[in-house]
Image (cartoon, rainbow, N blue to C red):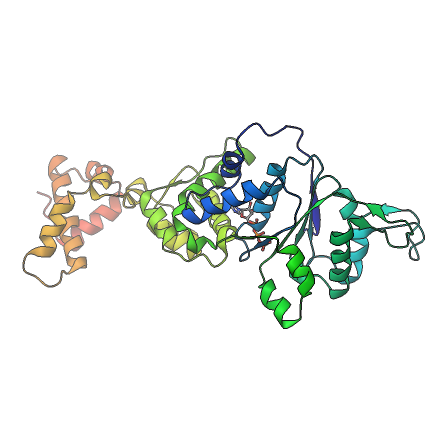
Length: 365
Ligand SMILES: Nc1ncnc2c1ncn2[C@@H]1O[C@H](COP(=O)(O)OP(=O)(O)OP(=O)(O)O)[C@@H](O)[C@H]1O
């Protein structure tokens, strides 16, 4: 886990409408996401703090970055993960240190707050910030002044604070495990990023966006192609790890099925319940097609007929065996009973075909 990172300032003034920019940065057209994007486009130019909540992996950091880009601020976006920096070091990292502040501090160092001057300071996992620092942060928000550790002169600062947490900060404030006054100071503009399970209609857009990212990062590498059955299988999952989990599944698909079609079966067998696929023949791949006709099967009406002739159940294995026998017989007839050509037609090994002919007692003369 990275403890902090800095995004250079954007030199470009905003030319597009803010909501259109938010749409481009954060994929998803569901009602909840559209409302959220309108909210962030409206509040972006202000300097009041924003508190982003939502489950882990739902995209809180992406929202924070979008807020920064939409803010028109010319400073940097400085992201700090409060949970990833040991409590005793976090203060020095945020506030900076003067020379001689502690043994070994042989030079002055600007803190991350100073680096966010004119830009945005993103404090991720703010619920994990130690209580002593919460008090100092509140003071900074109220006075806009920052004093380095070991320093005497506070410096006036102009940065926008965006904080995020997967915890219930309101509950923590009520229970006394997070400063209530800081909570109210942060929650001027609360933004809730919904879990992926609450916006499954966004999944195709998000998937496309992630595939575009992958294509840009790995030019020339073939991508998997998700068919409609795959999308249905993906939307049937409840995604407890949210978009981070979806990214992992996508990465598996890129590695296991480059340039190949991915259907519901691959999603279930290889991507979700992870297991490496058997090398699949083209014929097997086709079984994942959306409609039977697309897979070269008889029209769906025939299957309805098979199921609807007054019977309450169907012996699927027996039915499939009958189809197999009928297809082998037809292919043999078309090839003039030439086993090798029939094997080619059915994309089977010659010996596999001979075994089937023997097993089912199919006449070859
Ligand atoms: N709408 C989206 N479309 C495409 N990718 C997204 C979207 N939202 C998030 N992501 C990607 O999913 C991953 C997780 O998102 P992010 O780090 O923003 O989640 P988070 O809520 O901040 O998680 P945590 O609470 O664990 O820090 C990131 O790689 C991010 O780029």
